[in-house]
Image (cartoon, rainbow, N blue to C red; front, side):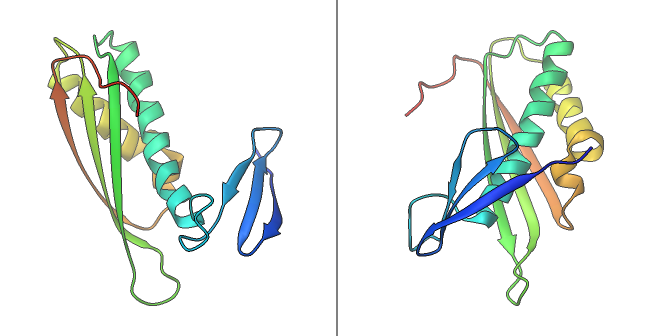
Length: 140
């Protein structure tokens, strides 16, 4: 299965990207500030890929979770290419009666088997999770 993207240079170091016929995404440098950097997008992609897997697995297990917050941190190599060498992914799962074993199993399956983004990187992956027995906070 092939995936195609197109990036069009806009100004400075900003690009407007689109995958297939999906919505546009602005990529930029931290100095430009109009969008995430390509390396930030990779980190978000890993967190998003794992999150989709975990939500899907928890739903199949009929878990009573009501929300999830994922925070990902990446350490990069000092020299070029400045690839990610280590990632830490913290899952905060919301809901009353959520079984920690279900969450643990879902994360292990995602990071060890299903998440294509994780499998595409040559980085150490650490993770943690915390279950919060309440409703998730309202978006900022």
